[in-house]
Length: 447
Image: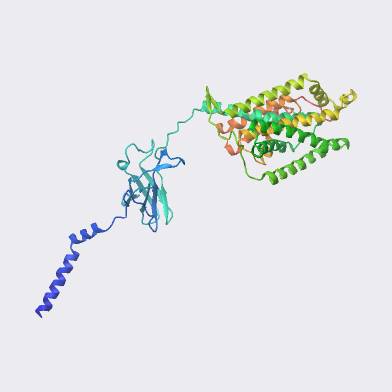
């Protein structure tokens, strides 16, 4: 009996010792913390958690990746201020803090634990509110080493857009000049003109990437190939139609089908992806007073201005240019005066297609090559020619410059970049309502 009492007393004492607060506290202190040490690698917990990755963007390796920041303390609390948990970033700059479930939480970064010389980017708060909507990872982000971007004044942005618009307008002007020459002598509205732009760009790409020619030589080869294409299509398609007396409307329908054929050929042979030339893909810009330009942009502007100037002088001074203007004014009278009208029209197709091919080559240098690039630009080319005045060279140039500037400055005034061409078309409609013949066009009696 006495032995039994002793056993019971011993059991009671042992139970009291186990359940005492001191032992409980000791047991708690022996439980390992879920927070990893700075030298360890954090492991995502099961269930819902908040993930934070701290990267110093100002320090990058050879691959351009930022440097992770380990050993930074992050505290997580509920929206009411109750502490939920904490975490320390590991060697990869990551920390995972387990949360009870979905809801709103506040993540606070302890700036005193940031390494020396590392601080949050200017104006960034140390707290982030995370709306945990997932049972797994919910992310919070803190920017470190990100340079503050100063707001560019409106005047500078407008000037840069105007300069870019002039460059774009000059490229469009080359294609519009070709279209205006063809329309002036044949009265044909050529809906396959956009594919001639694409042909020049693709020919430049093939000569550059396929044949290994420098970009300048590849562009020259593309212009020659475009001129040959212009001669071939007039000899094989448009000249037979003219001799058969096919009307202008029927020839316009033929141009639509010819454009669809060329576009399908480009898609089949070139592919649907967008490609770049081997040179001049990405260039830094140099400052020229209030605006900046890349070397390739200066080259595009110079080439376009020189070619347009030479063509305009040739149209005004040379015998062929005068013959082209005579056929454009009155084909029947020109034929009765001894001009070979078919030969002049063939020359116009060669010159117009060569100018359009040069436009495509400059587009390829300026951006990238796609089988749809000419089709997307066709409406702007038509708008430029119509705005300036159908059949007039100077009208095509003026219209192109207005279209180019309006397209590039549209986003400055709130037009979305995805539909920035809309502004130019609105201007086209407004001007034609006031002056239907275009800016430099002549009034003609119809009927």
